[in-house]
Length: 188
Image (tube, rainbow, N blue to C red; front, side):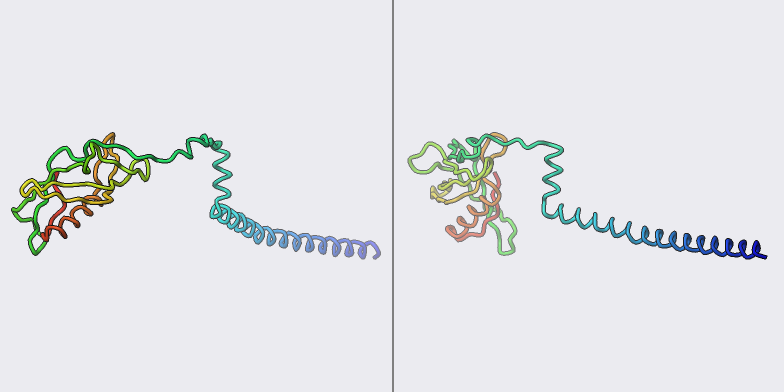
């Protein structure tokens, strides 16, 4: 009889151990199932915060390509004015518009003139490829009237400075006001 009691105790003890092991396994699996998504979410939030602040981009940029600092003298050189002999090599045509904004058969022809007592246009550069002309003049070929415009925007295209679309709009608006005639954008 004591042997049977011992066997029963052993069996009960083993089954309790197995139950505890199984319960511990459940807790471990549950902890893993909760911890892994939380850790991944934390890593993602940390990544997003670092990317938004620019620290991670800077760090990754430093890893992939080391910074090359430009010489200090090159950074501090001011953009000086540029002398331009001619902006438009051909005559400039502005078509008169009717009341509906449609072009009519009336066309005004202009030729560019350099500022008074100057051989060149002076472009004040804002960047390497953009700038403004302080004084730009047009001669109406039909009437010999001269119109002067200030602060006309220009752009460097290839090796030549040309008037930008904004610059032409400035010129057109000023011409319309001076001539009291609605004009379209110029044809060159």
